[in-house]
Image (cartoon, rainbow, N blue to C red; front, side):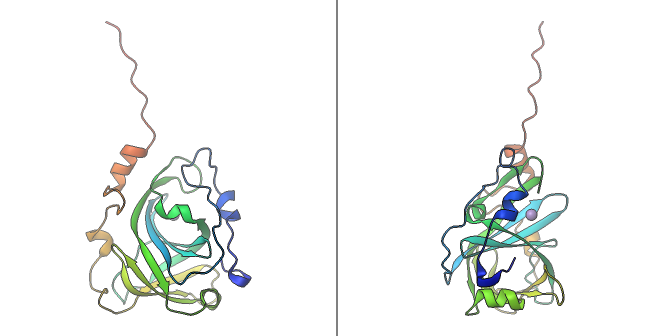
Length: 204
Ligand code: MN
């Protein structure tokens, strides 16, 4: 959430989770200096409902938006992006199964790379509700904008600008697998999910 001076915190992130049961990282705010270029990731998250989480590194945490329909390369598509609590930087590499509690489900690292704001002052852009930026990921590239819906606190729209990386392609359908492990959601669940109990050996 935007705060005065762009200071980021992880209190909300930590309060929602029990790190004894969740494999997610507790993390820490690392380095408060704004960098012109930071990491970004998109996680495909099969929770109560499937959605995609867009995360942009900013001032030591990851600004985060949940995008129910996922990103689109079509400039005419305006994808709802609900801003959620900042996540720790370590989350940018996370893939696995959250067994119970907040966000329970399967998390796939769907895309990752770097992002660069197209504005001088990111804090001001967040406060104003319009952040233009570029992505250089494996799947998502080029120019994008996040625009906050008028009078809304946390509802934004994620829109692809028309450029060489836009097009009439459903990127979530043609590139559904993990950029980290090349696995699908079912494989991640099978590999990392809770183990079924061993059947008891029968005598005789
Ligand atoms: Mn999520």
